[in-house]
Length: 216
Image (cartoon, rainbow, N blue to C red; front, side, top):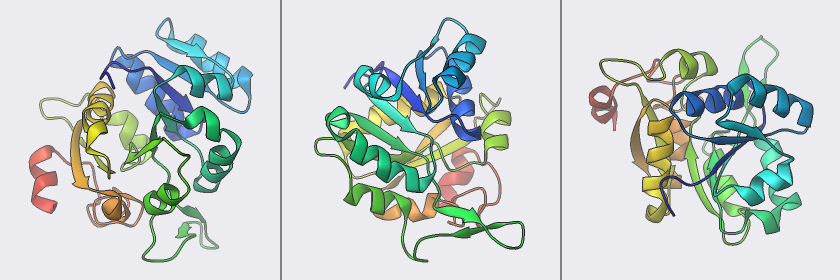
C-alpha cells in the first residue's frame, strides 16, 4: 500500500471534521462522506481543492484508507452494509465506546476490560485491515495541537497488521502529529477513553514523543 494512498473520512462529527481539516492542512487529499451528502459537500467546499465529497459507498470504493469517524455502535452497521466495499481497505477506527451518563459526563458502554478495537476486529469485513488511531485526543486538542511546534504532539495507534504501519504513520504525520505505536489491538484499550494513554484517561493531556515513550 502506498503511503500516498487515497483517504476517505466517513462521518462529520467533531472528530471527523477535524481529521479532514488537519489532513487538508497537511496537504493530503481527502474524500468526505456522510449520511447527509449536503453536509459532506459543504465541508468539501469549505476546505478547498484538496477535499471532495461522495456518497458513503462511493467514498469507500474510491479510497484505500477509510477513517470511520462515527459512533462505536455505527461501525457494526457500516461493516454489515458495506462488507464488499471494505475488502482490501485499511480501516482507521478512532471510536470510543462511550455514551452520556446521568451526571453530564460519559460512561463506557462495553465491558470494563473490553475495547472498541478488539470488538471491531472480531467483526471486521473479510480482507480488510484495522488500525485503532486518530481517537486518542478530544476534538479540541486534535484541532489545537495539530502541527504544533517545536515538538509535535503524539497520536497513538495500535494494529495487529505490521504491513500497514507505514500507511497509518504517514496518515498521522499528514494530520500534524507524531505517531507512536502502542502494539497490537490487544493494547487498544489503553488509547480509548479512560485508558492510560488517552487524553481523557491517566495521561490527561497531549504529549510529545519523549513524554509518550516514557509512558509505554
